[in-house]
Amino acid sequence: MKPLSLFLIPLLLATAPGYADSINPSRICDVTNGADAVRECRDGDLLLFNMTEKQVMKQSALDRLTLPLDVSGAFCNFTSPIVYTTAGVTCVFTTARKKGWKALGLPVD
Image (cartoon, rainbow, N blue to C red; front, side):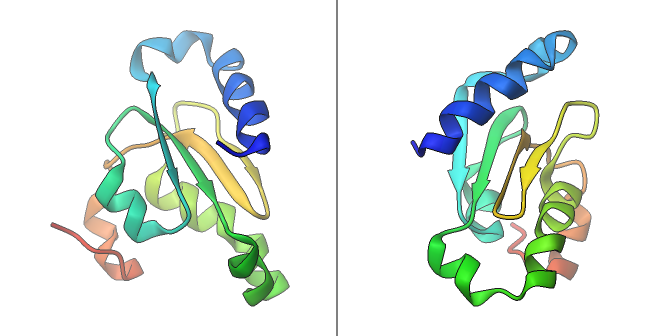
């Protein structure tokens, strides 16, 4: 697990006491791209979406600014806290907007 993860996960849990039943804290889905999130994450998982250093260097400043919106819009449960930076997002994963994943170029089973 990455050092940033050690900070973000307790912060997410501490700020969401009313949503503890919907979170599966024993299941952390640590991914670096949307396709992996679709394949590996399940509803209620703590999604830890971190870009690799190579991904960060490849993206434009605008892409880095829109990453939290793209990830949270596709994968995050809006009833739980969402913690983000320009290089990553931590939230409770949901498949509620799965119908829109194909339009984002994500695999849909």
